[in-house]
Image (tube, rainbow, N blue to C red; front, side):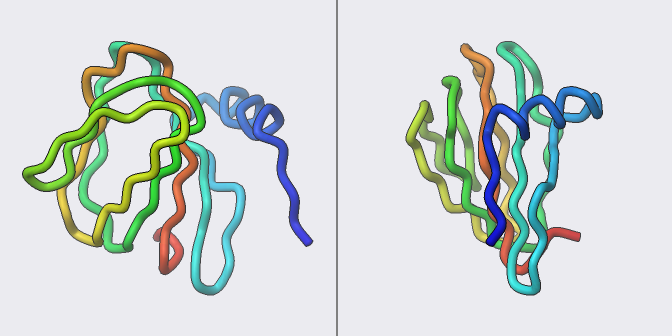
Length: 105
């Protein structure tokens, strides 16, 4: 079993000065914690993997392809591989669990 605590993951991510911390990588998937602060710009480009975002905290909008929706704690968003997507109008610091399948990179 592999178990993780969100507060420990956030501390590790912050200590490494990065917006993204991959903390689990298996044959068919990888999982990471993505952080964007209020007002920040999301630099993402389309990925070669399907993704699922689970918003742990914060508030923002996300555009996937031509569709836009608001997200907050508890929101889940699926992004198909290769589709342009970005978080924007981040009004509260955003912390998002990201699941890639197959594993990222």
